[in-house]
Image (cartoon, rainbow, N blue to C red):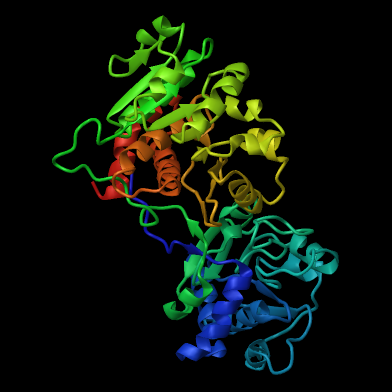
Length: 478
């Protein structure tokens, strides 16, 4: 498997990208230069992907339309049969108006019939900063297209949330510029964009500090995995304790094995009154029947995982005790049933790992997942990892990362238990090396998905654990 090619980590909302565009002239890169580079990037991506064919370029009145005017002109210069259809003329004096004056090719009405006649439609109607829902003639025309290349995002897709506003078409290819937007990674936006090309258009990097991005692509470089110094021993690598339930014993076993494989020095399953079943598991996982209060008397038990397979009643009893201890707590699975409708019951946790249903049980059903995860992190003071194919990791300080390293076959029973154990193991190791809870959650989410890619289709959760070694190597260049 090839290692993922590094991409810029910062994700910019449409408003932040507008600030970058506005700041660029101050660093010697005027708007028309950026527009010409953007249109050139679209034309280049089209030529690389498609053979010459009847092409209709749909343009709107803003800068997105300006990029379309440039792309149309350059494709026509290459001999492509290009026609342009404008929804409305560009605003007088704008960069798009300047680009429009350089288009001398044929024009057509902005209608579904024209779109249906074309072999390829370039959608440069609206960009990511959409101000209203898309409907009417725009939706009908885009709906009639057979193949679409979107400029920035498919029109109708909110670049900040990945949600559809009214109607958005399915693009075969999307070409965007400088930095990805959250909507390129969040569903359904990620799917609607098709293949997504990020083009360098010469935007100066100096625009970024003033913008202060707080949303990121989750990838190595955003975090650093714990190193293993020569003098390390099992206690410096941390001790993770996992509460074991009476019935779904496999969940705690998977959590324990994941914490061990990710590098925790010691891992204990605490199973008061039910230890025998756990003692039949892997010999490297310690098992104890001691009460939680006795175990908390040992200060070396720095990290606890509460929830996987524990049961709602047991979680409701144990969680407040753990939270009151001041230890690092990873809350998963049954803790969300125990705290249904009571977000404040989770305050004091280090990391919370709900899937969408569990999140809704505690915080209410999210519509904008990114905003909802951030709000939950602020409310609880914990890092909130909202699981899904577009997993979001939100910190209480407002930072958020979006993970796109999760193949669909990772949706299998036990995968969440493994993730909880990985987070606990990374927190335990990283405590002496300055690895924050957010770093640990982000790193675990990336490694989790990457391991699933190595395990391949047909994976069951037991295949995920040995694949963590290859995922770790991908994140550290060996």
